[in-house]
Length: 253
Length: 253
Image 1 (cartoon, chains in turn brown, purple):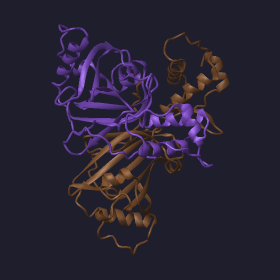
Image 2 (image 1 turned 180 degrees about the vertical axis):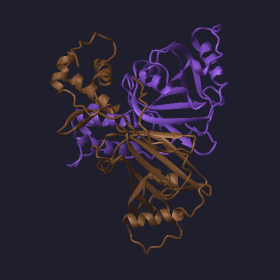
Image 3 (image 1 turned 90 degrees about the horizontal axis):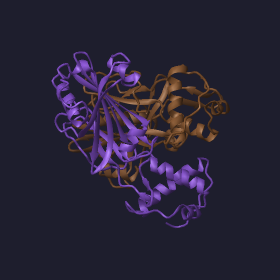
């Protein structure tokens, strides 16, 4: 990367630097390549370290850079496309469902979840924790809330918790008649437990996908899944194809 | 809000403060209410101003707070659900399309867009700019890229640019046979032009929805739409309903 002096521009300095750096990443660097250290980069672009850090943080948010302890800052691979959404009109845990059940507990859910399920706020619901791995990396963590009324024939004989219990709850849930499902995507931040599972720090940006499974006119189950926002793009389409693909790089810039 | 001393906890201090503040917002504040000033808040929670600011930024990212110049920090209303996705198997600009065409220019697109459209990188394509408003607020800005080959009968007689030109391009595009559409959602940041249109600062987090419209086995048009991440949740479902609703508040926390 050559020496580049930034012109004086009205937009924030770090934002302009981000754009210049982004172009340099496209033209001069390979995926996985380690960037020069912060002092050298700041000197080359004629900016303060604080400005450089802001620009690097921005590019990390956009999934262009990865910062790893002991390695430094590397050029990130394109985000992984992870299929979500509506082509799979199916209960959780059926078909080519990409989720691994990890645990199941009976607990009172957050108030907003209880409201969505139309259960009393202190009524415990089955809470299945599942995780999703793509290309060997953890990409998402899910809490699936299932009220007792959705699994009326569930017996207490099985394991009281753990993956076996999670599978038993899913199996009973699948006996119901799924009418439709509705999803929403929004920006959130990883809580302590999700962060640990996703190998991120608490507060890291995540894409939160909330899915309501409707049966017999009411919400039979509610899934709150958090996807790593730095490495994932969520794909959905109107064909039956499930596509896990890379790029294209068409981010706003 | 009473005086609350933070216990010593292993998670980052600002993150713990964010959780405490979030609970206070739920229980003690109304939507639109103005928060006490930073000095008072920092004193009440026994934290440094810098820690408080980090927590407030986090809650702003999560859409819980709004910071407006001259007003202060207010409790944000629930995010607005904005329907995207696949129930509308239709060309842009048809049916109950929520977008307003603003402009159209003929220009070489970003390299990644040219690659997705399979056009030469220096080949100009029709670039339609549209905006989407919900509840009187700008929620999204879109660039729709249409190669000349997708609108073969477009005449040069109409206005060379502007909304009239945009409508002419959309009208010609709609003559084609739409086979299917594929979308992806990912986290991005607002560029200068999008930021202005969305009433945000450059670098503000946005949800970027990329949609490929496929006809005759190739990408006939490519849409890159940026939605305000602070105020929007994107909804999609497998029914024909278009729902613009509020909540539920089921964010990760």
